[in-house]
Image 1 (spheres, helix red, strand yellow):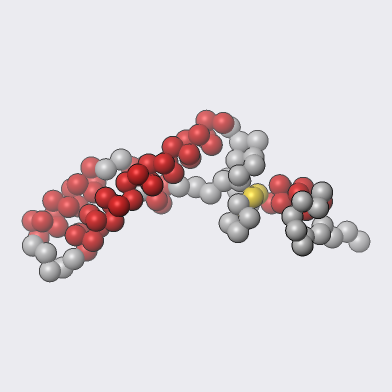
Image 2 (image 1 turned 120 degrees about the horizontal axis):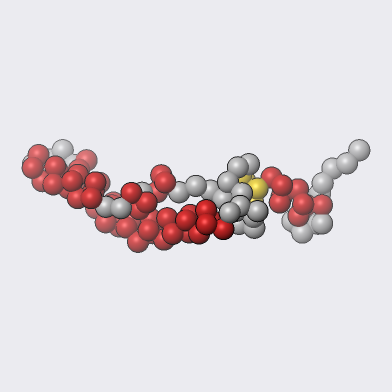
Length: 101
């Protein structure tokens, strides 16, 4: 199990990303638009820099939904390799069978 504080921190980041996503997108389009005056683009970039750091989507880290493990994460299933193997052993993932020979 991952530390509860780390899992909660990731939840908080995800909430911030969702909250600020439209604002960030609007500011980024202004900054990247070459037809806008330089002063307006600069003001938009300063506003973008003024937003909370954790509201950026690049600060999110994928974690296992069951254990919170940050490494060996399968995006499609949202599970770590350990939980995937365990659930496959118990037959709880449809169509997946743990091989043994």
